[in-house]
Image (cartoon, rainbow, N blue to C red; front, top):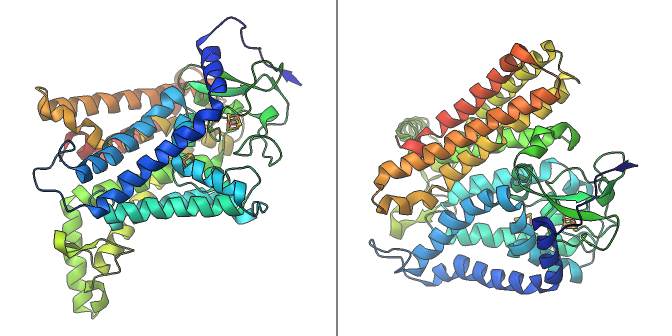
Amino acid sequence: MIHRECVNSEPTAAAALERFFIRHRDRLRFVHFGMFLVFVAVIFVPLLQPDPPGDATPFTDFTTFANYALWGLWFPLVFLSVILTGRSWCGLFCPMGAASEWANGVGPRRAIPRWLRWEGTPVASFLVVTVLGQTLGVRDHPEGAAELFGGTMAAAVLIGWLYGRNKRAWCRHMCPIGLLLGVFSRLGVVEFAARFRLPGGEGYTEKGVCPTMIDLARKTESRHCIECFRCVNPQAKGGIHLELRRPGSEIEAIRYHHPNAAEVWFLFLGTGIALGGFLWLVLPQFQDLRQALGEWAIGHGWLWLAKPGPSWLMSVHPARHEVFLWLDFVLITGFMLAVMAVMTSILAILTIAAARLAGQGNGEASVARRFTELGYQYAPVAMVSLVIGLGGKLFEPLGFTPLGMGGVHAVKGTFFALGLLWSIRLGRAILCRQGVGGARRWAALLPGLLGSVLVGLGWWPAVFGL
Ligand code: SF4
Ligand code: SF4
């Protein structure tokens, strides 16, 4: 048995937080219920409202407010919050996870099937939801947002109702953003750590109290912990306790925290598909491509491509002068998948190069293991890109201050530069722990630096405009 240092018995911030949440743990259901009402209001009330006038603001029109609350506040802040509070959104606030768990209490509680436990399931869920979000125009049309978020809520309830016993099978295995929050939570300050850790590495069990099936005595990683506080008991000598740590420390020492190749591939794929979802909207070349493909399709008798598709699959809103054709659906989907493939290939090739260079510098372990560990260095730059690119509305109010748009670009640019520097620092620390030193370490760092810069160049229009 490996003994970890016990927590200091003196009052600390972590101990105070523990006490607070344990005291109020039973009241979380009221928070969840309140958040459920907010969810219903933000997602469904705009369907009952007339379209906002052109000069509407979040202060004068509910639909505009709901849109800003979703894309300007919820989306970027949930991702940013993992740095300071881990997956607190999941455990403390998320109405979807709570509804899924509630449904579990009244369902048949079947064993979690193998297809659901497959590591590719949350990746597929993320890709489908991200692409559908673009083809439905979820940012511009309340109907699209209602379909996507309402459908996801229905799926969460169904999966929760069917599978597991007092568990959140949905949160662990299928939530489209759970995996992403999990990767980024490895960067965070909060850790729920075992006081006495059994050897054998990370485990999965449906037997314990953990709703996300973490084998608590073997817990080494943060990503599946939704911070429900159910396993925390300050009076117990063993068990789990809350620790506050230096941001990024889990990834710096990733080799001791269950590095996982599937997670790294997901990080690459997720970065790529999100970039594709942003670029098709802003690149003028996309419209040129659409025009050329449309002419080619009509010239070759592919007339179905020029017809509008069903409104459950794509944006069909004639009153708002937006009707997607099958051509748009095929192009948007194809473009996003192509950008994803290119970005994933670039990051994979650069990470293989880094892993090989680390080997030449006497880096420990196999190339595959070094590849997986080094893949995590992209986590900060990927997170910052996602927040700036797809959650850019967060920064828009700055444009109405004396700082103007120049200030918005400066803040975004600074933010991105910090993400880039953090990625480089993580890469250096990972190489250090692999035993790569001196000039060799700097050489092995260069591919990662190039990869981070390329991610940044991809998001350049989001940071500085075209
Ligand atoms: S994993 Fe998904 S559904 Fe579950 S609590 Fe987190 S965000 Fe909500
Ligand atoms: S490790 Fe503890 S706090 Fe984290 S999800 Fe499991 S039971 Fe909840």
